[in-house]
Image (tube, rainbow, N blue to C red; front, side, top):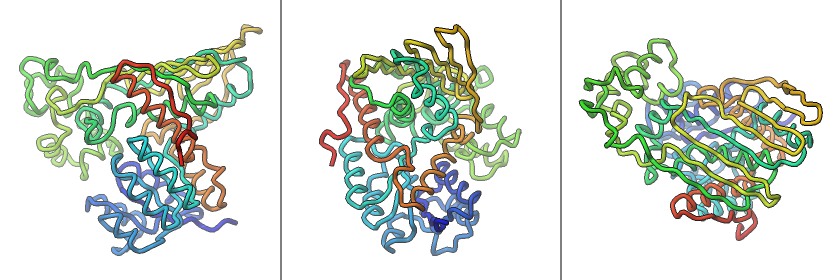
Length: 424
């Protein structure tokens, strides 16, 4: 039996806490031995859940790095812009690394991460959790089987959801590119990576269009206040913060996204957060600048094409995909995979066991657990081949995102740099 894998968690936010929960559920396979988290409440709550002493719970990851090799592996779940330094430091110390997506925000930093883990000889798994779901396994199995014939085109939709856009990308941490990342990198690098994985190749060329259309000051309703709690028209607004978070509190739904807004699940704590914090602001009076809708068009070396659409203006739902082949068509929605055969003119429902919803609150349809299962197995066995989202494939999908953003900003068609081009 492989030995139990020890983990250090850098960042006890929603992602770090979620991955840590997997270790609690599988104590025979992994255990958290240290955490670094600057927010005291989060740090103490995480430490208590994992039975960590004061010396194992610190406010800065550098304090752990200064101790040398503190665990078999580290889970880097810091803010998007703070990934490079801890990866370089802990890789050099010999730790295997699970790195929350995006791996980094620039091509140069992504390449430095790849070079660092390869030089150190450690395993890297990037948090592209959609690769690890039972749904993806079923859908990719159909594509790889040849049942569809040659894939000619793909349509893929990410319905972000009106309230999710307001929570994370208008009021929340990912509202500004200069503080986080582009919308495509922060939210949809999952999807461009997933398309690459399902089709078995990266796109050769990309173009893109998108903008911030709705969540702007000029669309503010007459009579609206800067904060929802002071607003005379709040009751008629679909983006009402008191309604969204208040309904969750009343229903006892204390996970994400409510857990991002308050540390204590009481009406008083929520009222204070909406009066003073970022999540109580009018969605038309924020400092957001990321797009609220975007389309990416892709062409592959085979001549196949694909389109990806991200939009805020939907009910939050699972991603929807259609794959068009020369012998059949596939339709998937995160819970079902349907295949229509052109020869027999019949439709088949491909069976698989769905695991939760495809959002963060639902564990990404089993993807969060699937990633942790694969990463811990890879570390225990010393086998990086057990990881589906390693450094080179993740680099390629990040290069696709960066090329698509250049295309959107410059109105160009961009070539996607291949994973080996200049990588070291």
